[in-house]
Image 1 (cartoon, rainbow, N blue to C red):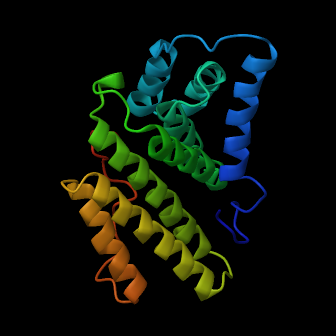
Image 2 (cartoon, one colour):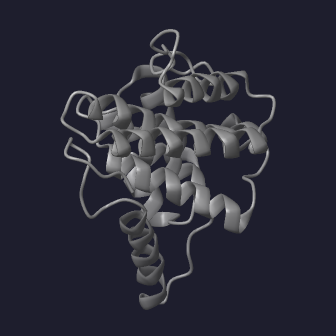
Length: 209
């Protein structure tokens, strides 16, 4: 979980997201219902609104509705996390929680089906770790604007580096992930040659991140 005095602390994070997943699943059981067959139609529309048009505030309710029906869908939690990450006032702790939930679901249940929402399973898994690294990078940049102890700033960079390392294990061919990792290592050493521009560059699929 992200900690600090910027706009990102709080009791949320992975535990909150996991709790939402558990509550949604429990609701189906208590109601005596069988979870509906997987239907990505609503999530596809939300993804297009967010990734292509950057209308994440409009996409978020659609993603919420999708997750109520499919609470253990890693793709849904991935996009839900992005909807918090790409707010004008980014809610980094909520983004972190959703992306970590997506990671946990992928580790537990395996890769997504090939072609789901047009995604390659290996590339998608790498993107989940890449975006989580971006959350910690954004948190680091926010921390530099405030009186945050250097130890806490270094911890954020280390978390981001760990995400890129895991992401490269998932998708060793990711050029962007390699760029992330190299830049982050330079930042951690305290001797970066320049301020990385990777916060605004395109992701693996060409969508703005």
